[in-house]
Structures are given as structure tokens and as C-alpha cells.
Image 1 (cartoon, rainbow, N blue to C red):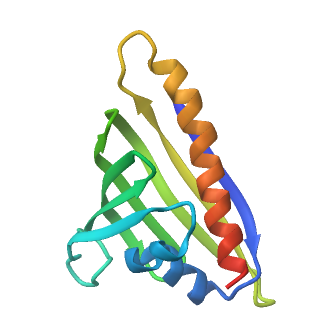
Image 2 (cartoon, rainbow, N blue to C red):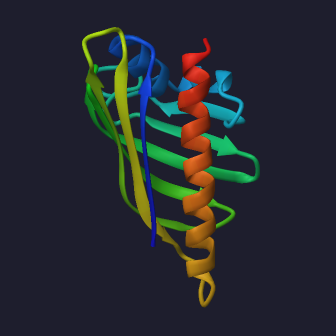
Length: 145
């Protein structure tokens, strides 16, 4: 099982951080992400609950459904499909806390299992390491905008 948890204080206001992380169109601005496409709009907001988007990082691609969307503090997602390896995704969440001084505490969590017979645990470790690098990279680059 992989368990990715990245916590970081970002020197940006909470509304700006939420918009950057919840809107698929902003992902093109992150070096760690190749392409992000909105496949289906959300029920009440374009990128809100029900939205389906694909996100590609290198050769790895996921299709994620937004399952909770509480502007500007919380978002949850579920990876429905992935390639080239299948993932059983248990949890995906981004929580933001306004620290009151123009900064925002971000807690980003993703948990699941890479479904590869016999060597899945090796891929879980790689997923945990790469996911942590990608999430940290996105949050770091958000500060430099």
C-alpha cells in the first residue's frame, strides 16, 4: 500500500491556493504535471463534485473523479482508472487552512495500492516516493508564481 502525505505552508492566500489546486486548467503551469484535461464538468461547479479529469505525469495517467468540493478548504478525489498500472485508490484529499497572515497550510493525502501481481509492493514504494515528489513540486512552484 502507498501512503502519500505532504504538508506544507504556502506563502499565498487560501483562495489562491484552492483555485490553483482545484482547477484542472492550472495544472499545465506545474512542471511536474504534463497534461490535465477536464472530461466531464462537475454538478454545481466546473471542477466541483462529479467532475472527471485526466491527469498525466510522464507515462503515468490517472482519471480522477471529484467527490467533495468545499471552497476554499477541502477537496476529495477518487482515482477511477490509471495506466499503465492499475491502482486501487482508497483516499485522495487536499485540505487547506488559512493561517491568517496571507499563508496557507496544505495537507495533501493519497492512499491506495498498485495492482500488479507479485511485485505490487515494489510499485507501491515507487508510487509513494514519486507522488511525494510531484505533490511537493506542485506546492513549491505555486509559491513562486
